[in-house]
Length: 68
Image 1: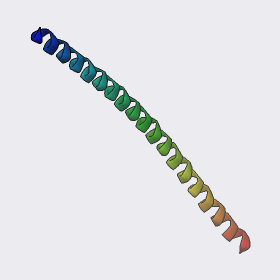
Image 2: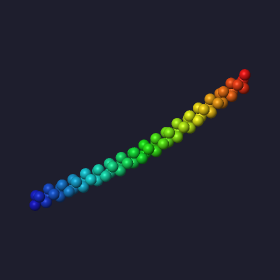
Image 3: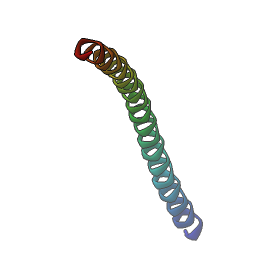
Image 4: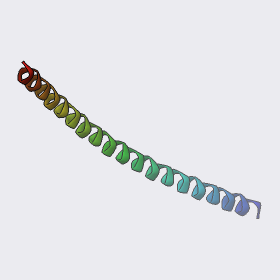
């Protein structure tokens, strides 16, 4: 009788641990995907900022030559 109770308790504990592990794994995957998307967006924004810097530099150069 006691062995059955211990076994049942062990099964319940194992099931709970498995569910927690599965949930944690899914959350880690979601976080990794979100980080990957954020990284891509940051790279795109960096490229846009660099392009705007080049345009500003060109515009400033044209303005200087136009004011001469």
